[in-house]
Image (cartoon, rainbow, N blue to C red; front, side, top):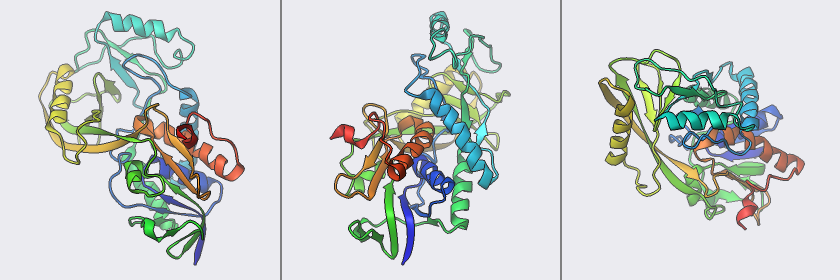
Length: 344
């Protein structure tokens, strides 16, 4: 029987950032990936410390940004790739009132590090009231992040590409098939609803669509433009635009209403012809209080869950992976705000 310290089940940000914690600390593990495109893998990769509807920030935003940059440097040491794209967000203002609100909020201690007071006019797109730059915002190169990390895990015999079979898990004997483990962590996104050990956790699906488009007149600057949704350039002369939020239409199919919403949203500020080349959909696991769910099973002390990352999957997955590792290995208490126990 092969023995490892950990089994990880999942293939999104939570799973891979926790795998990094294990690599960093010299722990043995196997990651089970079903091979489907998770919500993480089709995400925009936006790293944003500001809620751009209200010009506010969120819990531990600065700490999470700092920790993410440090973590990506650590990952770069063994994958030899830099995943951080310096493409700051420029929020298009709707009117002068938004400009004034931005300036007012930028004097706030929590927001002064993020809201740049020097407004800018962009070429190509409509922005008569200029744009505000979000300092410390960036993007993750999503495809290369997942591709290279999975390749690294595969090369080191730490990856098994198959669906996890709950019926073969024996938590009393710490075994799964012919593998013995000390701890098993489930990072399954909405797949957790099929998990008999954690199916009742308080996560809800939020369906998101995005489109990839060809623009007749390209946007030259290497930035991320935000009005209703995010627009940024990709490879092969394509641009990403998205994503939508929908808690009601939850089928796996592409919803025409969401595609229309994206088409109209882009048309509002891009005045030239464009063509939709591809449409994708994913289901974000969200929580009512907008914070992750992390913790230990109430009956099986070797089973853990890491879920509910929502739209901030990169920041939440990175930052709280270390908190969970310290909880398991060093008995450090989890923040009450993210603990599974808050729903008990």
